[in-house]
Length: 100
Image (cartoon, rainbow, N blue to C red):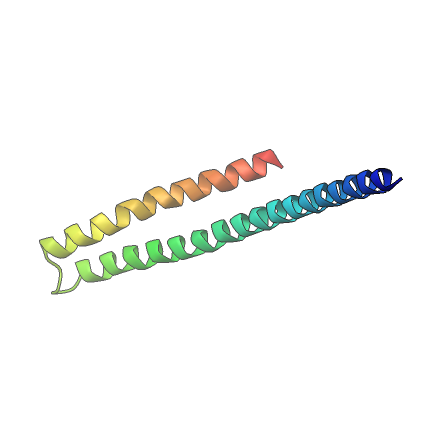
């Protein structure tokens, strides 16, 4: 009788543990998915604002007396990755709309 109670309790504990593990993994997957979506949105806004600021600075400084070759090179080096990021963001958003 004692072994039956013991095995029943072990089976119940194992089922409870697997249920808890399943619930925990579902919650963590949902949290990661939500965090990843929010992270992409935040990065998108920041990178587009940086691109706009760099392009504006480039245009404004090109018309001023502070413009020289080094500054042009520095801004172009900064703008190039931002343009690539912008196109990746646009591609991601297009794929998101197509996938819906």
